[in-house]
Figure 1 (tube, rainbow over the protein chains, first blue to last red):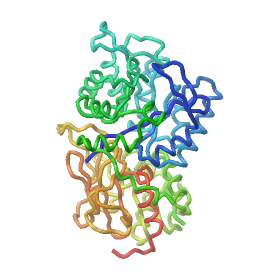
Figure 2 (cartoon, rainbow over the protein chains, first blue to last red):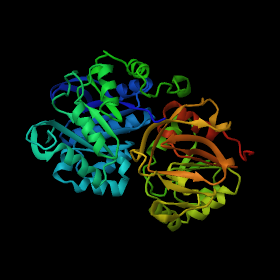
Figure 3 (cartoon, chains in turn cyan, purple):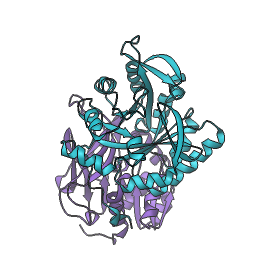
Length: 263
Length: 206
């Protein structure tokens, strides 16, 4: 049976993991390579790295982080943040990332999804979307870019459908309203998009308890749940989350092979 | 020496990193002569079947791989690699290498499935095999694919996986193995499988 995935998100700035609340007030919380290894050992199913540095120096630091992560962990991971060209995609994929995530740049230039899917395969191309509630939009959600700072004219549901038709192989839905609040995922948006598209949907933003994850993976029909704050600060462990989900009947990957096999 | 076939189908970095982790000696190659000289072949790949077949043919690797497959030496096809060793793929109606009889099918629409089949799914081990040493029944492996392999002869079946329908996630004909999942991305169990392959003594009896 296909398992529901628990994905840990690491925001990386100048080579350090950082975390903010509602897209602001970031502070450094650790070394992304060490954190990735630790989550791998604890049984995370997948990792996402978002490069939140804008500078060219930060970009090459990020490629180095990706290459070092790829030598240490043997599960899929994706890289996003500032990916705006096929060359950007090629660099992170060649460094060892499984997938690349496009967000603001795809809004500005949707063809990047199509071109990336043609070159690397659609399973490599993830659409990351930052959305916030807006009653003026048909779906009730508006797409934002530039880390949630700039509103677009795009409706979240329409953009998800368009991205899928252009070739996105997965959609990560990040709720700006819920991000970092640990008050629960934006379930209505997640369910609406997951029912509308034929590719996997990852819920992001707002996870605070295993119950939130349970809700979004079941009632909101997400294929995977992205977590950050609730595990970064040690409040919850990956295995604790999975134990809870299993107890509620959600199929999760529990036996990861253990460290004995790593030697 | 183990060789990893590079025919421009996707990224080999993950396979290389995993082989380094299990202590394998290997070389990445696009040269048919290095395939002929190899003790073991790993044939990975992510991408589209017809363009990948064109690249294999253009580089002369199609014949080298077919010849290697009948040599009796261990051969491991992963993901697209396990599909291309069959006769034919529904992806762009592509004639493939025909090393193992069978076809490659698209996951049907109408089952309410999200395609690609992406994520961790459990393997039902159909029979014991040296490559499964240390891997329990029901272990999860990482899959990402829209087409699935359908080898013709049921005796080739090693492991099944269910996604809407049961499909052959692992199969073997003599020295030639095909796995639809990505052992290089399947955590410790995936590394175990790769380590088992590297440890095979050739030629392995059926």
